[in-house]
Image (cartoon, rainbow, N blue to C red; front, top):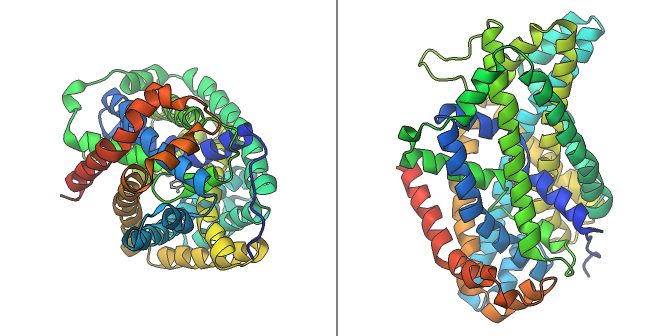
Length: 448
Ligand code: PFF
């Protein structure tokens, strides 16, 4: 007998949860640093186009399959299969999603742990505990283990409370807070000397920088940012009521995600140039803008340091923003294996959550102890290989394997008359042919 399934209580609840999954470190850190590394506004433009032309259709595939099946990715893909072969591949892709979601969480929790440590740092500073500040903002194994454990614990607490009381309640609380913090920080940074130069670097496109590599990076960014391929959106779709229009909700999630990434650029790039004005180096020896961890963990803290006591509060606001963004994303990743354990292994949620959470924390610990060898490897295996290949599998299931009449029936729920819309004229062909081909082309380009 299976446990009763959770459900989002309203479409706003779903929207906050799905947008919360999408909006994360990928928006506030990944997107602006990609912009910095790929020639400013040319990347912004490529990203906007790919988010709507590629990521949105793939998102729709996940949401529709999930809401139809009302099950986790393994059972959902097996359920829409039409014979033993497709059932086998459905199960395989479903397991792949669970493994890749867990791997993404294992490195994501480490990075989010850094954010929690940097959030605690200013409080220690206000308390005059300078030794503690050094430990918190240094880079020791003990610090990393401690804060990965704290962040993983927070993720588990929310997931253990279930869909409505955990995921929905916390996302609805945290997402507005995220937007307010982001806007306050932008207003503050834009009034500082040097900010306008950063805005210019962000918003003036240099089209000579368009290249296949730029398009591949933009596609990877869009896929990661919309949490695609690994079944997070599928499982959130499975908790969604049949009264809501899927194409409309999917479009809103995409808009919020893209909107917040774009808005985060208005904070991060100007902040870099403000830091330069205040005497911090923002160009690496190679002559490129510092991107990677150095940007968030060195350039910005150096900037906050130059601001005196006000800097402590700006640092608190900034790292609180990062922690909130991470948490609403990490819960969606943990929900993928937890839902599988609940539905396929019949383990109750309150037990499944710590069990799965501890296994993933163990993986994070192995990465922390072998950071140089494993961190980059896990990031690229999960996001450069796992996500695109599973994305192709999901498009193939939605476009080729699932019976078209069932697909249409599911989309009609909450959107009567959808068969007469432009969406229905384009999308089925799109997920069938354009999406898999584009994703594969970009994948081949990136591995070569
Ligand atoms: N979308 C999240 C971000 O932009 O940070 C990352 C993410 C969440 C990726 C969930 C994958 C996932 F399943």
